[in-house]
Image (cartoon, rainbow, N blue to C red; front, side, top):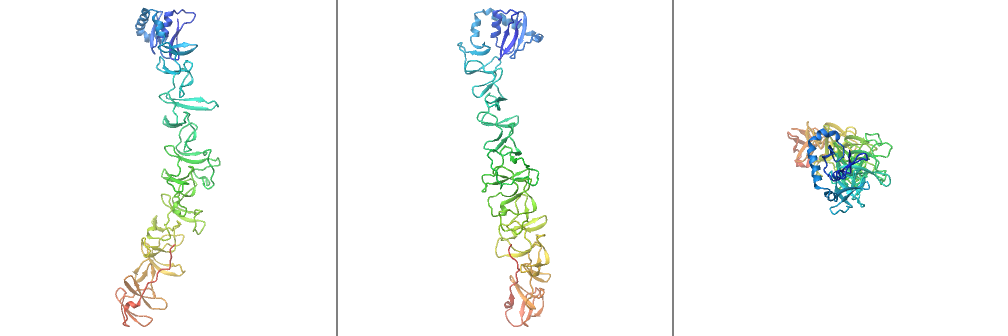
Length: 518
């Protein structure tokens, strides 16, 4: 008996020479279009599917269909042989070992899509034959069975012998000139539908050899059009965790959207920009390459506040560091200076040489004052209270190794080299007024000098009589070097003088601390 075959979705019976098949049997098989069914031929039941698998061994399962198939055969036979030519006029037919399709008028179809008995789309080429393993209708592809490829990858070989990957969507058309998420991974396809690899889209994205869009940290060779810039130093010189080595690769960072980080358009300088990644600031140049060392990240070039410092691992420095200042900034005394970087990576620094109490910074319980170069000041310094120019006092920040606010009574070297007694309050300000029976002005001890025994200093609206040690004379009658008797109150202020002169004539302005702005 004949065998059940499948070719390009068309079910048919092949009759070997050793068996005889009559014309009716052939016509039945050639025109029966159901995807899955049964039929009885010569008292044998056959079951077939779109894959054309002979299923004689499934007779027991299909026995219940026997009567249905027998009825179908009887109905066809009762119709007579004259019906078969009409049935064969439209549909698929085999011709020259290929498949063709005839329309209702009996004309062969060219350059059109048609469905097979299995419901799958197939393409009739310019010669009218069903295309196999070929591009169809420009943006589609059919497999070895002529079936349109959908929702799957396909690898082809270009005329130059290069492998090219395409992806066909649910409609069968290639995905082109866009991103496509496939199995939770992003791919980009060019205008011709080819999957792209390497640097793409103006070198803002990177896809691996597998075409998958890269995110996060990536060590890569730069784009072909990259021009080396010796001013853009990269991590690795000190063997940091992002060590570059000698292979010419650089570190880049790509966001969750796949776009590499470069300075934003709002950056006035345009050369460098920062990005906070996992709580840490990093710096990237306008090519997206990770940087190290001092970098101007805010556009200006005359202020340390526009700079940040990045270590050999690319991370912005936080806390105290003793390092060389930026080469393009002036005003530094030594090769190495102390800097303090806040949690945002910005160095602490004043806006100008006009230091104010607003510039004071508390770090780990100690108070510091940073000048406009970003260095902590030390020694005796003039510090303005608030933003005004007239109200100021002295602060003492200790030696260079201390560089923080000092408090209490101590001897301090002034700018003229003389050491003088000072008193600084708990907030570090030079004390003004009477402390422990001694008079201070802006922290400096006030006392009679130049051979005088007593001097009356006027401070604000009050006056005080002090001796050569700076002690305030309270409830006392004392005689000056000129022989004039001063009588003082309980607060130490001058109340009367025995020469009948106005006591205000004896008032003397206090001596200011000999200190300057930084």
